[in-house]
Image (cartoon, rainbow, N blue to C red):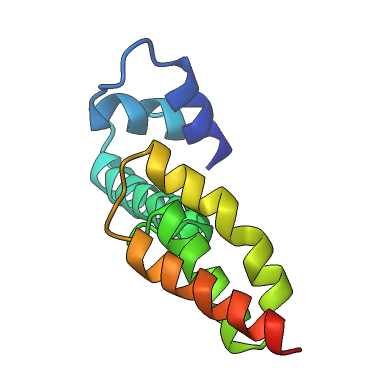
Length: 123
């Protein structure tokens, strides 16, 4: 796999032919009798590399924006009764939402801010 990654690194453009990659990776010629076997192995290697690279992106949340994740964190802290921590996070997120014109999340954030402030006054 390392030789294939080295081959990708050496490419001047993002495009290359599979036959170039097979001949470079396995050190064979395209007219070799076992070329089809090596080409099949290359496709399996490429699939394995793609799967590993796709799995390494697991820490990102492609469905949610960073602001939605922060709102969810504030909501989770509120549910857990950590009102002080949640209240401390609200102003930064509110400012970010106003600066980036993301008004859809503001009503829920402000509702959480009011709730957390009310809970802090009770204790």
